[in-house]
Image (cartoon, rainbow, N blue to C red; front, side, top):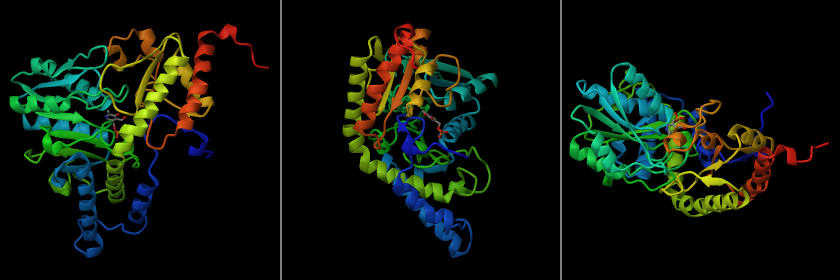
Length: 392
Ligand code: PLP
């Protein structure tokens, strides 16, 4: 197969997935090639792997200020999200109410829709025009039969941050379990779970320069966790299935790197993102940054380009080798406007003309410069096809 290589593209879609850090690829190779033993085996060639897994657990724990015993390795962010819901419902079988928001990722949104069909009651909190909700909104939604509050830390489409630490405090006081989908937040903003009241938190490796196929569910040590995958006693009985050693090693390394780069993410990457936004707003009339009035991730921009269809913009950007998206990669191709942007009150026409640009530590000023050169004429051409001389 003839594949388009990374050298041929300007990759501005890091909330969809990220390039694997060379150090991460390097770290995992021995565990793909040589050290294939099973951590549960009785002989040293196998059980030496458990020490390797524990080191990765410490690296992950250190990035989020957790205890290593609170780290459960999973296969992805979706599994972590599903496992958190599953635990909450199994541990409180008489409680049939879940509080979530209108702007969650499909991993929570679709699971809640599924549960609703099984007879659970779901309260989906509204957000304001900046994509925000408040602790009071959550307080008002709680009921004696609430089994779980699940709210994302950072929105994957807009980067808007929910006040999850304060929500965690509220839920702990009210005796309700609190889970946060932090798939987009981990590695981009400082997180210290030791100082928080968050019960469960989801991580996905491929959003932080690790390969796909590995994630984490943080489970507070006070919780007697009910496994979602029932099988062998791996992960101290919290997740069955032979450990994915190479990917876990990779995730450990990726977390170590993320901790080292957190400062850069919040300075250089943020400055690059701000420069990109300023440039876009200056060069494209009738463009708006969605969520600009809220605290946001340092790497994410969601821009509405009035009078155009995002799909057409993305196609033309793709022709120039620029990778961007119209929201979640999981919903790209759907003709519906983004549920996140419509929840923020954007009319369907404006939501349909919105694109997401998301940076990482590997993006350069030159790449953002290329976007700023290429995107304004694309938008002008789409808005006014008749005023552009045909190519010959
Ligand atoms: N939650 C959020 C906020 C996401 O952005 C994503 C992926 O885009 C997921 C969950 C799902 O993660 P994974 O792709 O690892 O299943």
